[in-house]
Image 1 (cartoon, rainbow over the protein chains, first blue to last red):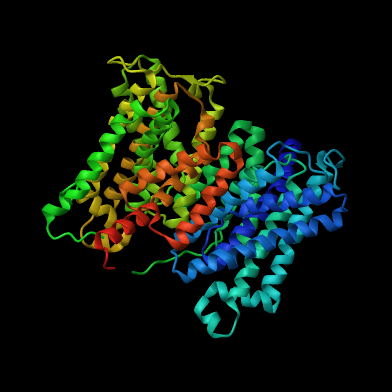
Image 2 (cartoon, chains in turn yellow, red; image 1 turned 120 degrees about the vertical axis):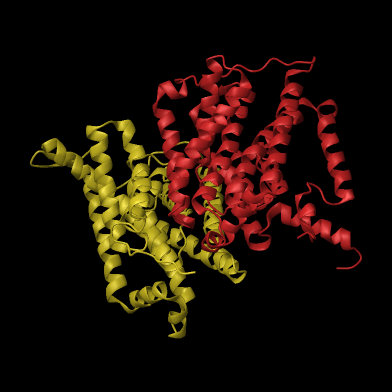
Length: 293
Length: 326
C-alpha cells in the first residue's frame, strides 16, 4: 500500500509538469483551433535561455523570469510574423498546424546549433536529493516544488481566465471570433497574448523538468508528447480537462512503470491517446463538436 | 491546371508531345547517369529513388485523400523489419518486398480505422501516437529489432557485370519507376477520383456514392504499402536495420517532403524526396541547420507557394508555354 502511494505521489509530481504543458496546448487550441507542434521546442528554447543566463552568474530570480518572458516573446512573434500573414492569405487550418511544425523544426535546429547537442546538468535552487517523509511516502524537494508550482500556475490561470476582464475577452474570443470582433475586443492582441501565456506555462514546465532530465535540445520531446496525450485525454478545448488529464497520465504512467514494466511506461501515453480518440474523441471534460455541411 | 477535353485525354499518361520528349530525355539521363558521375552521386540518387516511393505513398494519403499522417515512420519500421526477418529466413526478395508492403498495409488499415471518426488535427495526433509507439516497441524488443547490433540484411549480388552501386541504382530505379506509374494510374482512375472527392468534402463524396469507409481505409492501405516497400528497399540497400532509423524525425522528414514537393502531385513527390535527401548532403558541415532549412522552407512554401515545388515548376512551364502573352 505504501508502495502504491509512493507511485501515486511521484506520478502526481510528473503529472503536474504534463498538466502545465497540456494547459499551454489547450489554451492555444481553444482560442485558435491550432495544435501547436512547436510547443515543446519553444519550451526547450526558453529553458536554454535560462541556462545561458545562469551561465552569466545571474541569480535564479532574474534568469527564470527572463527565460519565461523570452519564450512568450518568441511565441507572440511567431503569431504576428507568421500566422497572421498566413491567415491573410487564407491558409487552411491544417496549413497553420504545419506552420507550427515548421517553427518547431527551426527552433530545434537553432537550439542544437547554438546550445550544443551534448547533455548538460541544469542548476536549480531546489534539490533532487533532499527528501521529506510523510508516513512511509518519500518525496523529494524538487517533486514537491514541481507539484506546488503546477497547482499555483493552474490556480493563477483559472483566476485570470474566470475573474478578470482580460479573461472574459479571452473566453469571448475563443467562443466566437467574429462576434468578439464586433463587440470591440482587440482579438488579435488577445490571441497573441494567449500564445504568449501558453508559451510561458510551457517554459515554466521546462524549467522544473530540466534538473531531473538533463538538458539537451530534445529533452522536451517526450514530455511534450505526454502533454499532448494529457490535453487529448482531458479534452482539447477544456482547461480544467488539461489539468485533470495531466495528473491522470502522470499517475497512470508511474503505476504502469512500477507494477507492469518500465519499458511499458513510455508507450502507455500513446495507447491512451489512441484509445481516447477511438472511444471519446472530445475527451473527458471537453464538449462534443458537431459538424454541419 | 491543364485543360482536359475528353476522358481519353484524362487517362493519358503524358498529354503533350513536348512533354513526351523531355520526359524521355530525363529518363534516358537517369539511365546513363552511373556512367558519367562519381559514385557517391549515384549512391545519393539511389536513396532519392527509394524515398520517392514512400513520399508518393504519403502524398496519396495527405495530398489526394486529405488524411494527415505523422506516423509514416511506424509503417516504414514495420515494412523494413518484416523484410529484414524474411530475408534472414532466406526468402527471396520479391516475396520479401511484397510481404513488407502487405504487413505495413495491414497496419495501415488498422490505423485507418480512427480516420473514420477523426479529422484533421485529431487524426494527426492519433497517427503520431502510432508512429512513436511502434518505434518504442521495436526499441524495447530485442526479438523484433535484432538486438543491440541491429538486423543484418543480406545484400543482393550484382548481375550483368555491374558494380555493386550501379546494380543497386538500376534495381531501385526500376522499382521506383514501377511505383511512379502505379501512382499515376491510381490518381487517374476511379480510386484516385474517390480520394480527391473525400479530400474536398467527405460528406458530399458520400452523398454522390463514394463508399467512405472503403476508400479511406484503401487510401491508408495503399499509402502504407508504398511506405512498407520503401522500408524493405532501404534495408536491402543499406544492408542493416536498427530501430533508431525510424524515429519521429523520420515521419517528419517524409511529411516535409510532401509539403515542400507539392500536395497532390506525383512529380512533386519526387522533387520533395530529392529535396529532403539533398539538403542534408549540402549542409553536411552544419548538421544542426538541416531542420532549420526544412522549417524555413515550410514557412515560405505554405505562405507564398502553397502548391510547393511542383506549383513553381508548373507556373514556370505555363509562363514559357504562353510566352510572350501572360
